[in-house]
Length: 112
Image (tube, rainbow, N blue to C red; front, side):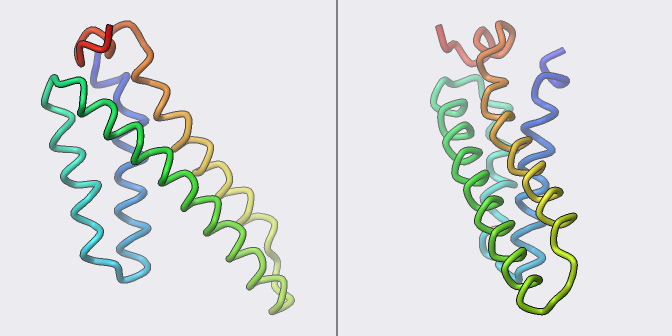
């Protein structure tokens, strides 16, 4: 059952890795991959670290949405759909940080 609770976190980390790959930041792809591995550890600091990274990642998604929208507007290309999609990814990533508040994950990571 904890796997289902962690699914948004896993998806958010995989999307972050794909984002780094898309922008040829191969050295940063290691970060989400290491965090995925750390999820197997039942330590409180893992939950805190993953939450912190997800909040920072949501800011990166927001920055990317703004930059892409501005670039597309300057080119005269449609921009609203990409802004909505990236905003949704930003919201998913930010909401993923909240899954560690669930009772099952609080118990797993000894957050009480």
